[in-house]
Length: 303
Image (cartoon, rainbow, N blue to C red; front, side, top):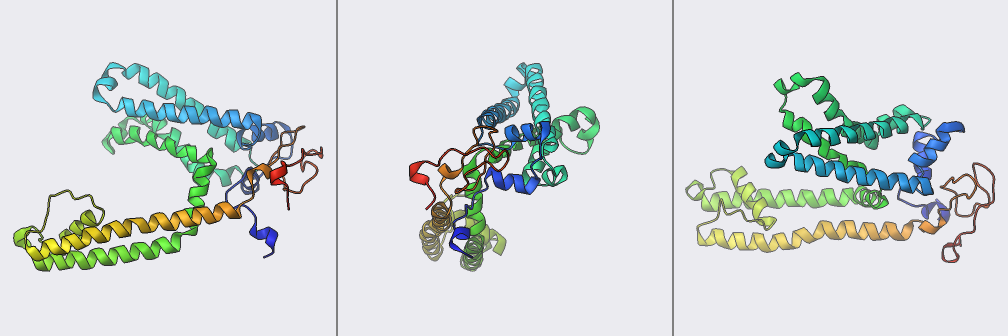
């Protein structure tokens, strides 16, 4: 791998999205693609801002609807607003399927599934009212809260965090394995020391106590009564302080490393003629229409 390959950004860019789902060659689908997927264009930024506002507002409606007093008093209003958001997100989902070259690939992707889940509960509750016989209708309604996950498609920092977690997955797995080992050992030890007389009726109960104590939550529903048990509990609390800092350091270190590996955002230039984005840092002409590209900012010029 040469130096140029190592410097490629870890975060997904509009160009990466185009490669995965396919960019239409021309026509109205290409124009729609620039608005829906190319977030570096003026129209794309407005589109994203409108959708973020709609997502937050729709989640606020779901939260308000779950409150008994507000739900009863404004039931009709909430239903009308909810159908408005459902129609909006349905149009957005259909638009995304229409303006990519590989619709099935998008529909089966993570964000494609999230887009579908964002609209499906409302339609299911309307067309299949008998579903309450199989599942609590409240669960179906509250599934709409998962619309908040759609924000990950419009905010680059979510992709950055996801990349950092993915790159740290082996270290996090080793850390969690160590935590499980400590919980098992300490839970078993407390079961032996305290016993059923003091509430530690089984090893799983002891493990539950170990998790609650290690995370410094301390519900107080089960506590050691003996002197030795309290000594072990004190050690477990101090151990928890140190353990909680480990995953934060792992992810933060990877996040920082990826920040220095990725290309500066200033190199992502937009064509002034066709508004296409995702050009290479050293490109002189637009890859779509052939027009000269604006120069990169002085601080971000390719080295």
